[in-house]
Amino acid sequence: MSAAQAKVIGVDLIVVAAVGLLAGVINTVAGAGALVTFPVFLALGMSPLQANVANCIGVVPGNVASMVTFRKELATQKPLLRKVMLPAAIGSLLGGLVLFVLPERVFTYLVPALLGLGALLVLIQPLVAKKLRSAKTHRGPIKSLVFGTSVYGGYFGTGIGVIFFAVLGLFAKGTTHQLNAVKVVLQGIANGVAGVLFCFIAPVPWPQTLVFGAMTMIAGPVGAYLSRKIPPAPLRYIIGTLGLVAAVRLAIA
Image (cartoon, rainbow, N blue to C red; front, top):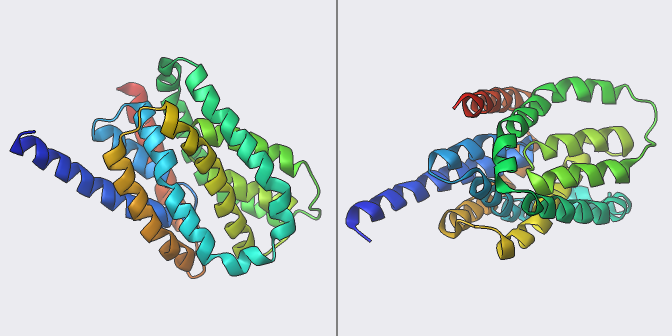
């Protein structure tokens, strides 16, 4: 390896470390860090599939670290967790398998639409939350919806935190912080199960993925702390807008 190549790789890893810190915080507070990291990974030369795999594996340490920080909130939600953890795991595995059963070019063609969908979900989340607050019942097909969201999460995953939080808000009982903690667990399962699968069958860019994962693990507890202190709505608007811009740029490239 030449000195020039080593310098380029070093700069790439610094960029990955920076977006890892940002994504670790965003995923805990708002649940859409991939809207920021995915375009960055593409800009660093990864294929869409590599960027997706790096995102899926790399956010897991941050999710786990956030779960530890949220242990007080999670202690009151054990019955709910027992209900939704298995559907989340099965759905994630199915989504990850679909990603590799279909030709890679299918995923490449779908990326702009999937990225745009994730961004749109982030932008409309405050409207969804307002509807949910007015809901009078907490009954519904929560396991089926968690399963479906996890299939999407295993396949692509951008915006799953927003979807999980919306599902929990409508069909589960608990405070905002408690449901946010459950959301983080579901994110961890949806990313983690598919991530384990990808470790064996996917073209993982390991140097970038390992650096990214280490940074999300550091940032996860920070995001958990900030989620108790700051309103997530302004952050969601910024992330959603950036995601839509990235989706449009990919679509016309």
